[in-house]
Image 1 (cartoon, rainbow, N blue to C red):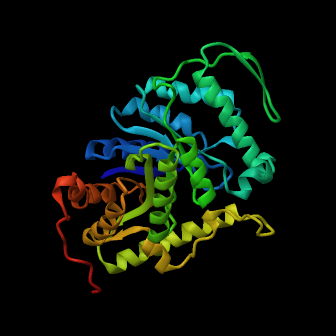
Image 2 (image 1 turned 30 degrees about the vertical axis):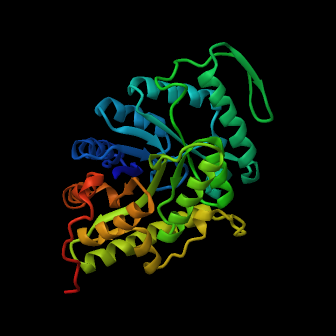
Length: 349
């Protein structure tokens, strides 16, 4: 199995005594150490208008990280296409891909947070059509060797050529976030890679993997397990009480996200807003606990066919990053090892 990272840097607002950039620099150092520990990728989110400093200029951040790393894959999870000028985004992403030596993974989505659409004054009802138009322009920009024009519903470009060219041909790998059966089927139909979210239950993500596999094969392509990345929260707990506190913190973050995402009239039906916010559901969906507990959960995913997991740790804890690399990753270093070595489970004091 391959393990990467999923998450966000944070820059807090404050007075003259607060260094707002410290969270961003800590995120960079976190990713540099992750590369040294054997993590293979990092996928950064894009969010706006949160009030708690989540990453907004994702491509900028990853470009800086590209200069500090050598092998780490650099992904977006996800760039929300309805908000972006597609030609400018194609140029920025191509620049990152070129400078990183072809290490860029282009994760895209339609968006799901009401507060972000409201802030941009873009109706959520237009998300699908804006997404499709933007994606078509980006793909043409990356693959066209000659100038082209585009006159669509939302964007107009005349006699343009996008520079620089991407390092990866015909373009960087495209990942799409999806949760509903219809959306997953469309990802497979397009031949793109699939991102599965961190809050869905174990049973749900296994069903989604199987659906993507069957849809891929239905369209005459060979299924590659590395075309699916499963996002999971992770925390190597010191004891049972420490694990319980971590789960409660995770629930608080989930509720805060739901508050930003839901429309005032509760009309937002995004899959991401459908999950139960209970300790039991959070324990099922997250990799929290002793090394033995985490290994047991990962073994279920490995047997189901997952080969790539993106991990989102609490507040970028370097201690947690090291503990997972030391105590969990060796059990999944290759297919020949068989079942992982067991460790004592947590016990209540």
